[in-house]
Image (tube, rainbow, N blue to C red):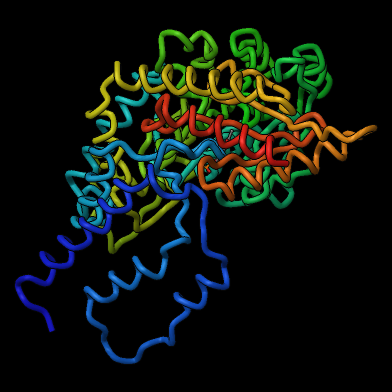
Length: 471
Ligand SMILES: Cc1ncc(COP(=O)(O)O)c(C=O)c1O
């Protein structure tokens, strides 16, 4: 079956497939053009019994997915706050698969263990987090929340003489979670997975700028001060990129012995820019933080980071030993810090992204994408039938489209906004996703991709204009 060329030929051909995808992003539809039935018809082949030619597997994979790939790697994708991949990180991600190390232990992936060590320190430096904080490379902010909140649970309960690692949550002292009404759903899911229960979440109101209101929060902290408390703050909420007032809130929350956790899935990267880092003032005082590499740093999926100030709580909640493993007492076995066992060398792509962009490049990427978000929202807002709901303060904006019929209701505008978004996606020129914000259906504008340029913004605006004109 195998010969010396078995990797070379297939990888060389795969390179051509990958380049053809990446180099044609500009001329292709940014939305999928095939229906699910069409994709199923091609991909749902009879399960083969015999071996199949490896090259054919890849060639067919490419032709069968045609029309079913979204152009999220390119510059005209403005949905869901996702980024693309800078070239070095994509190449490093390929190498990670080629190396196929199990980055669970130093013993099973020594170079990758050192890469994670180095990257953890670079990330803390770039993001202005405490140098002594421990960290974990996980699949995304969802699992970063789980990791951080597991440490929070351990710490808060051990202070109440409850060993949650052995006793679990049955009969444990109550933990409440204070957070804003604008929290991301991944916080709720982490709370569910950790057995804390979503009924323990107290959602507090936000002000006009989307920041958690201080008076009701302090009132809540005061009202039940004996209850173990996790306070989840936001560095960039999903809809408008709002930042809570960390320097005013965190010292007070600490006076009430709360664990303060910061969700900064994309917004933490504001700290890497001189222009925007003021939004994160004081967040370094928190107890844990999450962010993603696969969003604003433009690293391929799946790449999220958890940081925890109290490394002992982190270790107590996650670390693991087994007699069949080779543990290294003097180095950083990843199994002690991440909830995964076997795992890919997730730090490698991050290492390459940071090396390629450098401190200046990351700052420039953040500032450039914020500038494009602002011009995209402003230009769309100037079109007949469009209304700006939120002008970006960082990289997130909201737009709504108004149904021009007489006596149109808010529900009519909601439906119309949904329809316009769908027609824009169908045009293949730009991709936006929707959200409901303060009761109104809006088009969410997120710009994070390193490839987005002026031309992409102009094309997107022209596409919106055409759809509105033809409606
Ligand atoms: C504010 C916020 N928090 C958490 C998440 C979850 O991140 P991930 O998809 O990387 O798990 C997202 C987006 O997906 C987000 O925007």
